[in-house]
Length: 159
Image 1 (cartoon, rainbow, N blue to C red):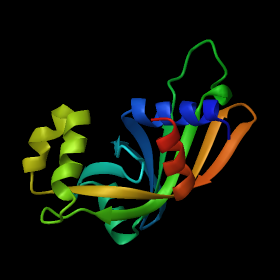
Image 2: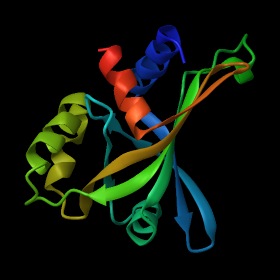
Image 3: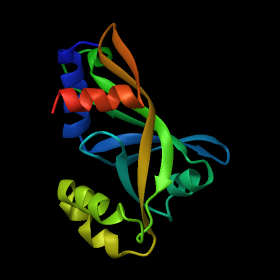
Image 4: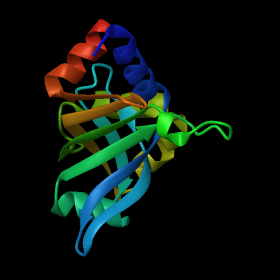
C-alpha cells in the first residue's frame, strides 16, 4: 500500500463521523448506523452507545464487531469506485473509573460536540473498537488488508 493510498484511507477514517456497525445478534448478523471517533493514532475507534439499543446489547454479549466507513455517494458515479474501509475488531468497555475514560470522552466530545449531554445519561457506555483486521478499498481493483500494527503505522506516517 503506497503513501497516497494510506493518506486516502486515513482521510476517509478521520473525516467521516457516521459508519455502519455490524454486530452478532441473537438471531444472526445485525447492522446499524453509529457515530464514531477514531483515536488520533487509530489504536481504537470510540463509540458512545445506549444500552437500550440492540447493537449495544449485541456488543456486550459478543464483543466483536465490524465498522464500515464509505466516502459519500455521487449521483453520476459508479458506487463500486467509492473508497471504503471496514475495521473488524474487539470491543472493550471503558468504565467511568478507568484511567483512559477522561481523555477518551474528551476526544469523542471534541469531535462530536452534540454528544456532550448524552455523557450524563446513565444508559450510555463509552466503548472502544480495537482494530484486528482492516480492509481498505481505494476504488475499483485497489484493495488492501492491514492488521493493527499496519493501521497504526499508516496513521503515524500520514500525520
